[in-house]
Length: 450
Image (cartoon, rainbow, N blue to C red; front, side):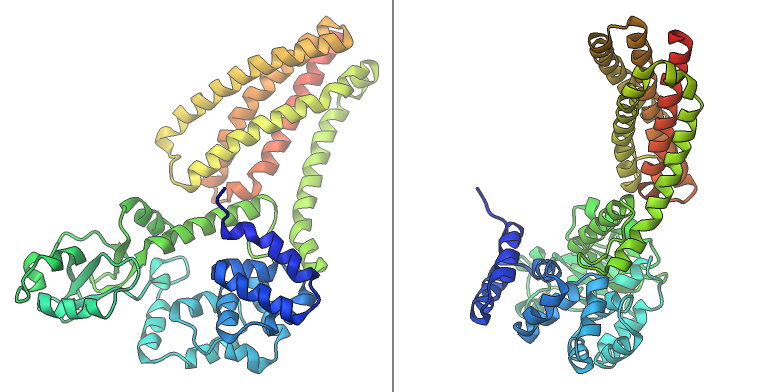
């Protein structure tokens, strides 16, 4: 079986925490640097309890420290700067790139940001100032500045000299610009090998270039790059001046960022919460959703209370209530997950929402019929009561259909209201399915069993 680097993390964490000699720790860290990416090294560092992190940190060379620091989550990054001597903290920012600084400035103290700005050279300073012209939700704030752009008058011989110096990763074209920097076209790198040295690049350039705009929404632009089947796409401003590009790797990172944020919010968490964040901070981050859940639980309990007399007379209803609630909750969550993912990917629109609703209702009806019959039979075997079996059969069927309906409608409404459905959809849906399930089951019980 293939072993991936991420699979080595648990063993490395255990060994680092259990070994008691500096020599052994140095050997483990050296092996980790050989086999793990910088992102995985950062995950390794964040997996260590805070009281042991600094001991490990001191064993790392400066280059590795810098790489880990750049990839840390916001909480871990701030904690590290607070824990190090200020001089050591500044040293981590000596060689940050513009892209790294733009990410760090959101999370580190202003004095560190100012220090890092002063370390930028003239070209980097201009790039940084360009990025500041756009807000953090716009593509222009997060450009890759390593695109190769050359004069439209350059010859093939000149372009080949540039290629000999090495190409940035994911470079498949060279961009041609006018003297004012306007994007004119692009030349595939492969085409240079067939051309004559004296030919100008303009003579066989592709002029119909698909480009992105600096004021585009960042995450929408990422999806465009992913679906373009290109390694990168150029980014221009309103005057068609070439500013940079968005690479496919950056696009996938942005998509993953959206996914991670949605998953964290669905659990009432922050995406960048440190694994070993303080008890106070973690409790605060999660406490609000416990409160919201408590409120919805009391609401469901209030509806149950309306049928207190029925439950007192038919105790079996109380025994079977969790079955009704859990079946509706699971069915609704399955539909909700599909719809939230579709909304995030732009697949759910006003045009296809009605067809999607019909499809999910059919799914709910099919599963409702099958599992309602199964539960009805099991209930009869357990309690030997035909009317009780009919009651729960009908309640399960109606609850699963209602759950499918809710799984489509609730996230759609929240999305229309500009509320993240991944954040609050599951809480609302669970409340709705519980109330519908309890009211249906206990209501039918009142009618059929008393």
